[in-house]
Length: 139
Picture 1 (cartoon, rainbow, N blue to C red):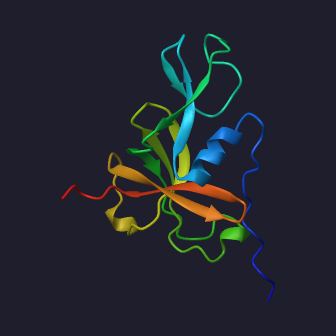
Picture 2: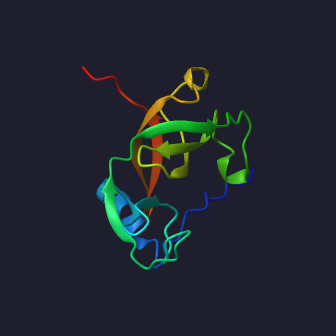
């Protein structure tokens, strides 16, 4: 029996490094364009639409709404051979942009489009991955 291959991990670039450094610190940082008055994600050098070079890194809460998801009952690729109920998802941050992620700490039967979710920072080797779980109710 062969070993499960390692999961591929992102490789930060000079442009995306502030995003990944933020995750390692337990915060979500994305870009904001003052001239477009718009939050921007994925990391880039120029603002979409205007091509302005005024992008700034700003911290956001990371909270959002589940936009879509898939309940993968079988491995999506060999590195996920041991993943049962893998839940790839897209979360729309409260600030507007969407991020591809994975849902954790939830029964697949309880997942609903539109549910509120909160970030979970998951260290994996030299990088921290951003995953999501259902938002805890306020006391």
